[in-house]
Length: 277
Image 1 (tube, one colour):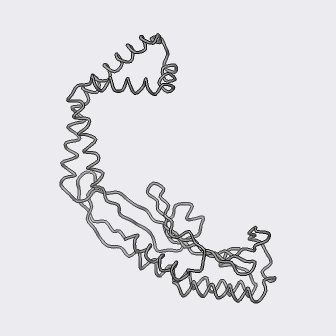
Image 2 (cartoon, rainbow, N blue to C red):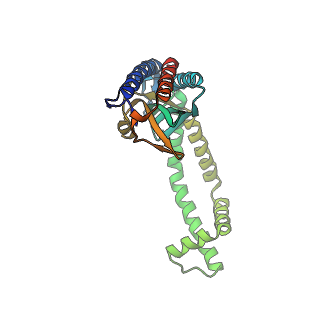
């Protein structure tokens, strides 16, 4: 049973009122934690522009405060989900009172965008890479031709010179030692300049990767799980109340059957979370 709830049951109405206060406080704190600053970044064409970003570490710090103040709750700590440019940082905790488990889920979803640091070295690397790629075009063709000759010689040695492409793939797939031997021979026969340029290209790409910077963007609005699944930016905060029966959690139950003592304990737990906000 998700809270906030539209139930007319007085207990659930009170739980909903408390959850709304928590949600309001959560949104306020997330808005504060994701306050943006302006930084300069470089585009792929070397243009320097201003972009706004926030620091996810401040959200993590806020979550840590909540977890510390709700120490009696069972939790997996702070979790982070990365899906391409989409990020989600969240906490989930639960606690049992009588035969009922109360849990909360607080989450922020945002996007991470990649830019270059505003450093002239980026332009220098891109220029050198372009020159290397141009030089390598003819060399790659030569190496490819030499590689084909080496492969054909080896296939002739093992009596497989007339195999088709599918059979050739199977031979290499099933014989890793043969594959490695051929690769070593191809590269050992490759032009020394080609090897140097290839290594230099890899080194430059690594250096260029180190020049990347992530900026973060979100929207300080409350969204539900469906909108979160749809990759919308925003934050989520809701509670679930489940009945435990024979070690199984059930979301559908009659809330009027919850005994008074358990109701009081559950309401106190909501107050505990509110104080932690």
